[in-house]
Length: 192
Image (cartoon, one colour):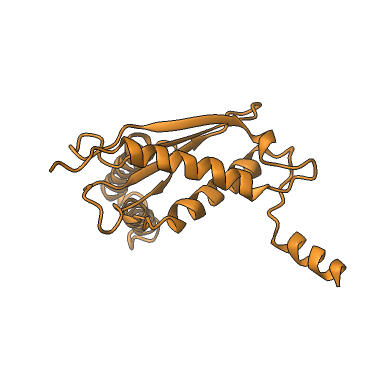
């Protein structure tokens, strides 16, 4: 009976290869998203949808250029236009990634019933060849009057993983929830 219980807890455990930097970051980022959404924040997917639409338009431009009815010498100007449009749209996509998304792993709407008008931007960093994971919570609109101050923590990932590569979720949840509470305490108070 105890073997089955231990086996079922092992199936639910999040295990990762400790030598794979990307899988460690991915596991932690997924857990952060779960924690934030479990606190009542709804994910804001507008930026992701905009990137998908822009990507679809870029692919459509490439397909039109590839399968245009006329052969090369006749469609030269059309191809040049398609290539220019392809480059410009890809530049816009990179600009969005560089300016808006940065290291963000989650965008949220404001909490329902909250007086703030901005959601959260949760971002993380795990530099290559480092065990220091930095998690930052910031306002989705830092210029807003209801925006809270940015809060972050930097900790070694070795605190949250066993030697076998299993994430100790209780410790990680506690750290992330403390950071969310810190951000909530930094938000401007309602005026009476």
